Image 1 (spheres, rainbow, N blue to C red):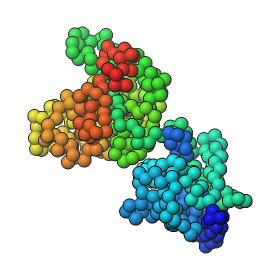
Image 2: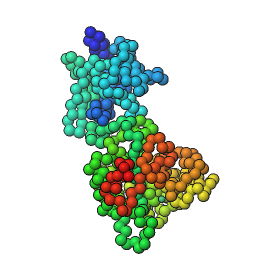
Image 3: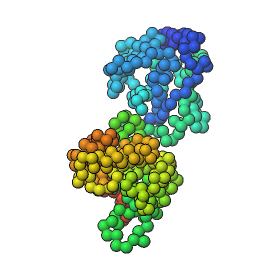
Image 4: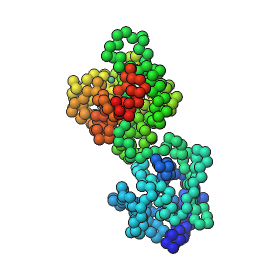
Amino acid sequence: MRRKLLLALLVMLAACLLASGAVHAHDGDYDIKGYYNSNNSLMVPLRDVFSALGCRVSWNGEAVVLVGGGQRVEFAPRNHYYLVNGEARDFEVLPQLFNGRVMVDLSFVEDVSGLQAAKNVDGESAVLDFYSSTDRIYSFKLADANMSELYRYDVGQVKEVPILMYHQVEDISKYVNLGEYRKLFVDPGEFAGQLDWLKENNYSTITMEELFDHWFEGAPVRENPVVLTFDDGYRNMYAKVLPELVKRNMVATFFVCPGSFESERHLSPEMIVEMHEQGMEIGSHSISHRDLRDMSGAQLEEEVFGSKQALEKLTGSEVQFFAYPFGAYNHEVLRMIVQAGYRGAVTVAEGLAHINQGRLVLRRVMIEYDDCLEQFAGKITGAL
Ligand SMILES: [Zn+2]
């Protein structure tokens, strides 16, 4: 009974809104961005959908409140139930926060609105229609990109993530007596094999930014995330690494030093810009690659803050992450990293990165020349 009444009210309200022109799209079509969560439930933005359905959506400091059609619905973050005019009902699928938006699944929308949802997927795009018992009332067009495989998210689950550390991807046969530097190299063929292994085992490469958005902003993250980082900005990053990544639709983070821009062995500014345009993340590795613990004041500021500014000017994007040269830092260095506005920083301490490790001292997993694929796999899963 209540459903019928609610529906009638909603339809009347919608008709009024449409007639008065308060709703922009005259035919009831709206574009919204949705995604599938890890259980294949389609999540849609609460505010967009319920505003279109004629409800008032607000946040009272403690709970999300929906008012419309003669009822008041509210729920607080992390609660497993919502209140409809004071009566508690369990969520079938918990709401999620994505990019600052509250996302709810269709069963919630159906229950609260009394409408039936029908989803029509046509290739890359999809239409979400809401029906009363007789008529199609609203039609939401879901943005194309959001229907692709890439957007199958696993929300708030991943606390531990391998951040792989590479230096040179280069054939070492032309070098003599590399000694301990040998471990800083990875053979290009082996490197390609490692990327293939990641693909075959359903790992998804993400940037540091995506990792932090997931950990600290509640954004969803792709399945089995792994971050690939490359230190020092050697020229083989452009020649040997970039093409292999692009070919596989992968991303990586490159920590570079603006002090090496003129060096033939290192990436030129033009190469860095091109890599960034191809979707790669650029981070700072200081200006000069000297031990930051030996510096203070203006000198340290230049290394930490100046490198950030130089790279931002070059790429036109915010540089959010830092890698300490030699993994070396002290309290003064950490303070400068914070002052300069970095979101996070990575060390060379061995291990998987964890959300509770401290965002300025994240561990990494070093990939070495003599790692075979089993060792590579063992390092990523934390078994080695
Ligand atoms: Zn370095």
